[in-house]
Image (spheres, rainbow, N blue to C red):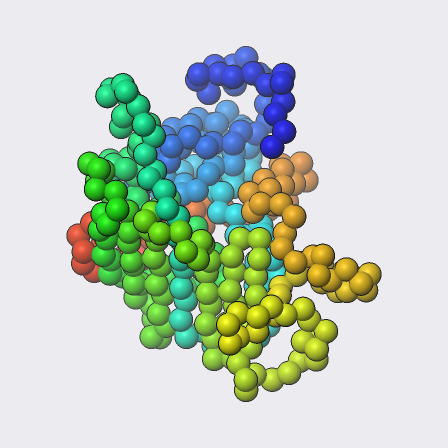
Length: 333
């Protein structure tokens, strides 16, 4: 990461805006529960806003932000990066063309062996530094990571759950935190399709990925990489003969490569495996194009409201270890 030596630091965003009048857009990457007041203030000042996801940690804040963004004349993008990811966009084009046919199940997984705790000798700063660990300021794993997984799956399928059954526990980090370090959320969807999102801070195997399982194939997406696994009885479309493949135990996945046709014509297909930049790069790039060229943002405040509200209900379900409804009214702006 390159650092700009001339960059100035400010303790208060209002002071920054007052002294840097040329600023047109601001990235809001504070703790989640502090997003709302900053984002609303910036929109009132006529600034473009990129708000990290989840957009907020309470339903009221989510709805207030979505209302403000809907009435704003400036760009407001929520930082769910899947929607700007070139590999995910390619996979979505395959999905929409029927490559895996009817969806039967979806799965989102996030595994990291982390504590989420910032050590401090100052007890008065403990909750501020470790805001992710307390229910007053966090929607836990379902919000901080599950909202990203759900948003990616919703972007593909447009499916909105009506309920969520959750379970959560502190399996490694029983250190006074209020949020579970391991969660499993099963969402109720119309038509019998299953959606499961699980996350843990106690195990790193598998990292992070989403799966869309269909009657004719499966799409697996994992950050910079993506694969299409076709069922044995799936119709052959011709292009598969020239596609690059990777072996996964007994399965062979077609590697999803952005600009594959161009790279293949240059004999550089394998060089295109995996994105050259992190997902965040493409999300920021899309936001800047929206600001500079007036193009629609990749992820709207209404998208952020939906993902955030689903995540908050999922967090409530994991805390109670029961099923809770996800009311359609939550998504109204």
